[in-house]
Image (cartoon, rainbow, N blue to C red):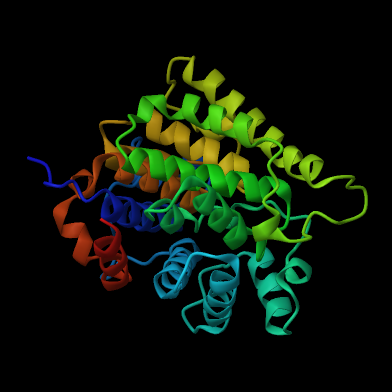
Length: 333
């Protein structure tokens, strides 16, 4: 029996948190050590009451809160709300989950009152740009607005063009899955989106972010990001063309510390286990790379495809921040 309706937004948000929680204790372990502790299929059970998440889920909820409070989805309305939510996260006593240095550095600069284009870490394309973008993909907005929101929330901390492009692709993936696209169709859809957007610089959302030494035009700036995402998607397609050897997906699509690799490796986990959602999370958590971010994004994708029925029913009350996840999910289902 499945949910009717499937509650895809809730499934995606809770899936992100579940993957984050399963990957949290494995992030800095070797695959051999993960298998020794959890068995060959990796962690498949939430541990703790509540099961704790990392900054991945915390920052996704910060984005969700800013979107919920926005009177309109325009850069002028959303940027100060994102800034406030990120700064609140930065000083929260719960921000003790090995947060990314890029986010902390950018937040320190935002707190000084700098324009975000100056506060951002211009050279960073870390996965912090897209680990938190899932709420954008769950909004009922046009694709241009989705793209602008996805890139803006990334750009406040990660100013590299690949961070921007990977965030838009991640949100787009959640969007099309929520709208009913089969998981198997996702790689081709993402390649088509990346090619179509390759030279689109969203100046109304990004302002003068592109203006830095060595850059000649906004289009050339953003094209670098899309090209790196296309290269990651090529590696994903090559991996999917091979039989699954059951090994570490990071060996094929990257360790996930950077945005385009987090996207590709999470997609690989989801596509290797399209009918075993918990298996997709466990596969993401059984990696030598950024296990919590990979598993979190895999959960966001599989949850958007299957809805809340993807997950064990009792998990929804056992995960940290369950009330916030449920509230935003209900508002967007």
